[in-house]
View (cartoon, rainbow, N blue to C red):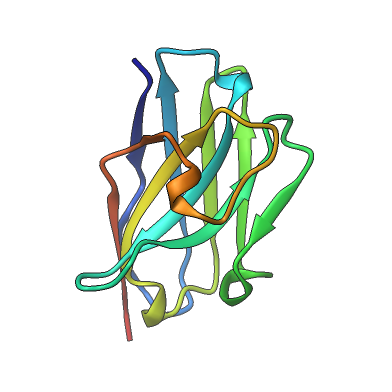
Amino acid sequence: QVQLVESGGGLVQTGGSLRLSCVVSGSNFRRYAMGWFRQVPGKERDFVAAISYSGGETWYTDSVKGRFTISRDDAKNLIFLQMNSLKPEDTAVYYCAAEPSVAGDTDPNDYTYWGQGTQVTVSS
């Protein structure tokens, strides 16, 4: 059973930074492409960023390009989402997800395993 646990969320002011972490256990981490998604109440879960199983390719939704960076540490079964220049519209519950694939996808339905989420709140 693959388990994902996120951490690092919190309250930050506009323009601030946070780094989210997600630790993966229960399987060969290197077999999975990984993604970050976010969701606000009453809306669908939206793609934020993804990284290939090798870490050689990354993808971002347009609204976070240049501000967020996804990375992975295969030795520690961790993925990260460094979030800089945060805006109030970044406020959401952030989820990490794993997909047994080479490349990351933007569709949440393509991901097999999910974490429980971590709240990020950006105050104006």
